Length: 580
Ligand SMILES: Cc1cc2nc3c(=O)[nH]c(=O)nc-3n(C[C@H](O)[C@H](O)[C@H](O)COP(=O)(O)OP(=O)(O)OC[C@H]3O[C@@H](n4cnc5c(N)ncnc54)[C@H](O)[C@@H]3O)c2cc1C
Image (cartoon, rainbow, N blue to C red):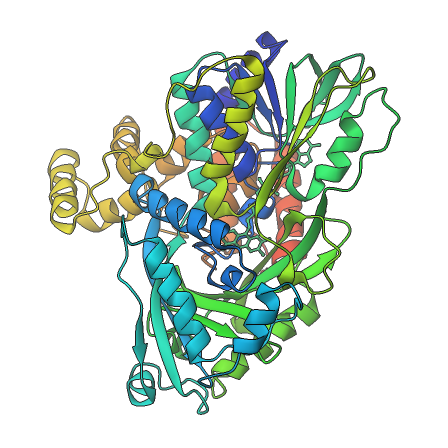
């Protein structure tokens, strides 16, 4: 079986020779824009050089948040917008986005007032200690911004006794703590993909395709290249959107065409890394919440339970080349040292670090000396058409995962204005993928699961697992699973063979990594084993009819990437896996 979904997209791409809009980059910003334009009936093409949501959009701290610390920089507009978007995502993606109680251990009462003021006045960009008063002010603003459409409880302070009752492992010098609510996301890569799949059901004059890059531009023709077959695909767009995140500067060069004038730098990246740690003491010490704490250098770090382990991060380091970033040893040491600062009695062993991941924040180019001082806001800059490049290039710079919808809407409005079209609908209340009709209320959720169990014969535990992976799309999946012989995987019985086949058939899977790291949480949950890799590879290889050589290549490419970019190696050798 060929990759039908991707072939269909390629076919659409070839028919769409003169799209109104070409979006380059399938991270969350490109995807958010794609969905909005499709909903407005615009013929749009999105191309992503790797897999969807595989750049910064896979490297987030898995938070959908207002950005408490941006208040210090006076970014009130950004915080207010982020909180609105956060709440919208709670409503529109209730299968993947959940409130998360977040506790801040506080080491003194009054510090941070002067530093906060200086930051606000742009007289310093150095982070400093934040005492209870400054935190109280920030959290009160947070609550104020969400007062009209509140989705989460307001903040609460705890005195020392109460703090140590709930978090006995905190550093003994902690004086008090504050708990507020932010939001976390279980499957951000799937959420991005679901928006593409939603868009594809709405409009036939659009295509979004992975593993296609921009090769060059000449005489108004942008030549795209299929990274799998090497085929060149010319298109003549009216407008191009550069949504390539940390690669925006490089993509602008590739889009310059016959125009030899250099484009000024728009993006300056900072790299961030995270660790996934399996340590029962640490997991218990979180109290089941996020701990949002400042390290000795005043930088904010976070940790919270994630798929049964603890996610800890992140670093923030200026870099020039965004390609092939990984968590380096000094970053790992920094994160572990920050952990030891907040939980001094908990020791993490090397073998308890199950997985690492890194990415580059595509921030607005800045000369700020301290990376934390660079704004996390988003902006769209337009490069007007030139004689050598007869189409404008709109560059989507910066932003956060949280604000993708608002950013997409802003750029959509600009594009609609240029195309002389009017907006048909807003995306603010549009549910995403398996979030459509998903019951947030426990009673309604339980009764949906009971109905599914009665109608499908599947067990309740299995159905709850599927519901948290696919939301209401579970119903389609069950129909597919029951059309053939199915069995649970020997190496991870929470997945079944036909469940993975459904992903392979429906979700533009090209590589083994697409399945193991982005369509499922097998990688980030720390559950990968050589047996699991081989079992999934076998299913993919059978579905695609791969030769033994193709299977061997796929396995070694994946294992190399896993070792290089996620610090995962297996002590037991892989079993042999052949084509059937
Ligand atoms: C460490 C870290 C932690 C973060 N934590 C959070 C968080 O908790 N919450 C939050 O809201 N935000 C967070 N962010 C920010 C958020 O992840 C990013 O702002 C967002 O993902 C940027 O999306 P993007 O689409 O602009 O970029 P990307 O996701 O990087 O997408 C750009 C895409 O363009 C593709 N591309 C590049 N060149 C080409 C080409 N020539 N042709 C085709 N495609 C190309 C790339 O392959 C890439 O997939 C974090 C970021 C990092 C790095």
